[in-house]
Image (spheres, rainbow, N blue to C red):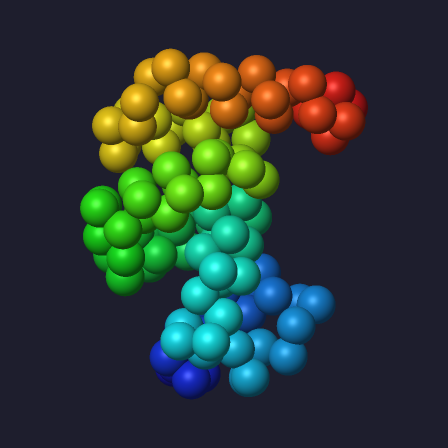
Length: 102
């Protein structure tokens, strides 16, 4: 079942938002970031199919990999052919952040 275009299976990733009010059109940035950083494999596959390789790659490039863990960055580097030097820089930044030092 879909809620305003979002699959019901994504609901648990948006526990802090009124899920019934989220839409791809209005909340795309939130949805992409949350699914990439917190989503299950099923949620990531849904997002990947929805956006496609080019749009997903561009989203990560536009955000300079912010919010993604080093492990997630390495995965997307391989899957989407992200530039190795940029990915290395993003990984270093993620590791040096207060959250990366936990």
